[in-house]
Amino acid sequence: MKQKLIPIHREIDKNKIEFTYFIDNQSQRVYMTVKYNGNDYKFWIAWALVLAFLRGIKSLHLSMGNPISILIVVFLFIITGALGVYKYKETHKDGREIYNTLEEYIERGKNTFKGDIITSGVLFLVFIVFMVLFLIYQWLTWLFFALFMFFLFIVIVCYLPPERFKVYKKN
Image (cartoon, rainbow, N blue to C red):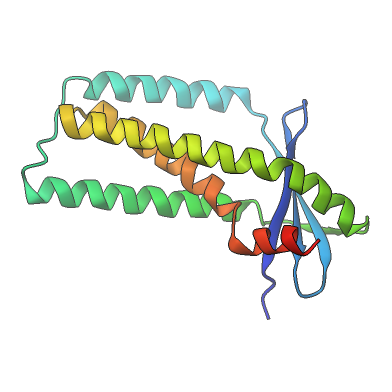
């Protein structure tokens, strides 16, 4: 049977290392994943490519009166949502069990839980603003920003499953 791991706490170290703690609700075991956010050269290459892409589409508009355009936008959001879920699931890889007390991690998680909810709310509001701007001006750059905010929103929302609420409520 596959484990259902529930994220209970995330923290980012000043050395660009992200720790995520998960709980297996059935066995009450705590697992930790470590993600190294290094590789500055990849960031700068991606940044340059994004800037080139934005410069390339700055004069393009997408008319939303056409049903094919609407389908393209819906398809882009489906792909972006799937990529967000995939990015979240990447954090589950290579989790190792740790043997500290469960209550300590649940307390830490309660402290960051409110921040996760606020972050997801802000990301959703920014996404809505970009979508409204896209629908008004039909400028592809607004759609690109909306897709990026939607991606980030999906990743953060994946860290807020209903089971996480139950774990905090129970303890």
